[in-house]
Image 1: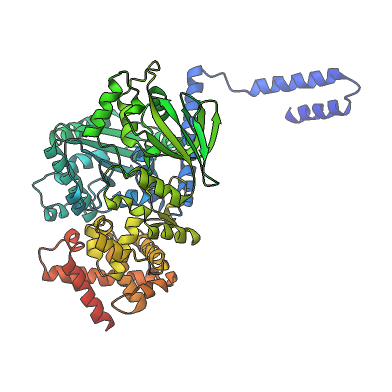
Image 2: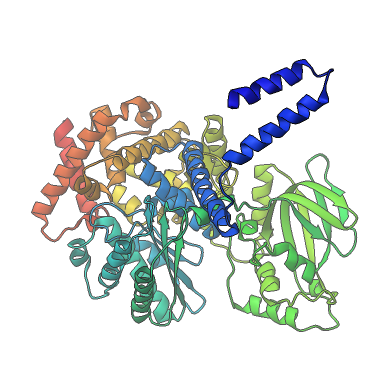
Length: 626
């Protein structure tokens, strides 16, 4: 029958001029045949279910493509499971504006992880790397602490067993009466260290009367969130348990399937924004160096400019600001009062206004459209307007807004520093504007890498995470390699930048800048080798000693104890290979075991931060290479 139909169409085509009836007959015959073999009609409900299943499958396929692209773009060498984990953490923490290094460092999974894959503690907008970092933080009633605990499973469903592990682990990990040594008997050293930071932050925040938020996330490679009643009951049990531990705190729990992760991935920052001035802003230029716009913006319009599609403040606008919102300090209380108290005085008469840096301006009437918007001064005013203005368009009061169009990095740094000089600022917050930091950024860029002077500047431009290095990372590895201090670089990384003496010793303009880049690349390769260790116990034992491994491997490469800047400058990175990594790791593990035999009370976390262990290590290196 099928062949006959095809022949009919051929015949009709050949005799097109002679008879249209033949065409009609054969076409109708074809329709009848198709009708006879068509499946029976399906109900709308069945068709809807088929469409839903197709969409779910498509979402998973698309998400897996997004994960592959994420891996390629960031030049990662991770396994599929590790890549899913990093991808998921990157998506669910978007609102926190974390660096990729911070996300990587938060991963604690492996043997004896208690069902926890990541722990991140955020104190206001600061993420401490060690317990010693908390010494420099003043906790008060305005302090906000977030503890983010995440499970990432590249599995096709949400498992109750993951919740069982959390329900068992959380009371143990956050038992303030348990010592570090006691916790190490139950959990690996990464979980313990991150857990101690979290619980100490919780304790200090609660005592000071601050706000604590505990956030649980569970990410799975499931098409959608499908959970049963028992799963829901265990979530309720976990939340009730945490309410009894973290009294008075905000506790939340969220599941993320492929559907939710894909939605987060597709959520991009809206870089093209519009400011509506009350009147056409004054436009001025300075030679060929830039353009400026100055004018007043109604408070309601400025609040709209700050607000994203979900009604939240656009945190990404403040990435280049040296401060975050300071809460109800005296100056902000005054701003709040002036916003809420409508009087005969315009708001901008009483306020210094807003300074914005942007690019690609387009002015049409009173509307100024901009790309790459950064509010570099006026964060306190901006937050106060967002939080306290009632969005009343009939309120004619306004705020002064000046926009500077300039893409020269040095000029932008000067603007940031100058516009913030009216208030006292810690020098450590302005290290990024130092000449050596700008020069290092230029040098790294010429070599195909990115020196992140300002947090997430290159991440937001979509540069590969594997090629981005921060000021702090550079300081830590230089301190470890050239000054034999991996312990201090491990214990108090922020102090390396804050202390003038240490900072000037590390960032020496007379030193060849290739030393900094090679040091970062060496450390990066060491971390990659460490990540690929299959023996879980070995990996856990070395997790706190990555800087020590970098220090040891340089001695194995150059066959000597003390390493100089000239050595690092001339380092052939091909020598940072599996063979030398294995030798350095074995040597370090033997040193750890030997030190613990002589110091029975030493544990893996404290040893990594102890000068006496570094001295023991260097002495063994001297014996090895004398």
